[in-house]
Length: 96
Image (tube, rainbow, N blue to C red; front, top):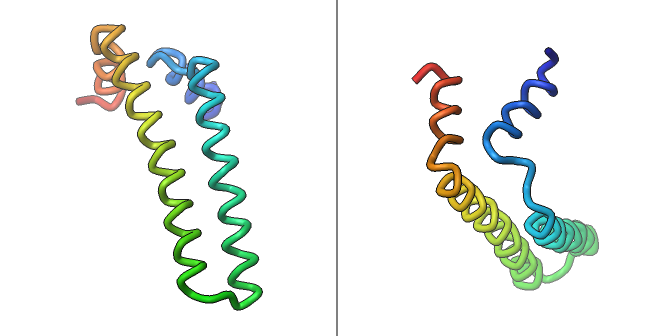
C-alpha cells in the first residue's frame, strides 16, 4: 500500500473525509485566506504602507484561525459520535 493510500485509509478510519457542509465552509475560508495572501504579496511588491500590510496579515491570520477552529470542532464532534474510537485507533497505530 502506498503512503497516499495509507493516509487515505487512516483518514477514513478516523471519520474523515469531512462532511460536505464542513468542507464547503473550509474551502470558503481557505479561498479567502488565499486571496488575502495574494493581496499581501501585491502590497509588499508595491511598497505599500506597513500598517496596511499588517492589517491584511491580521485578516489572513483570522481566516486561518477560523479554519483551525472548524477542523478542531469537527474532529471533536466526530470523536464524540464515535465514542473516541478515532483517537484510540490513532494511538494504537502510533504504538502508544
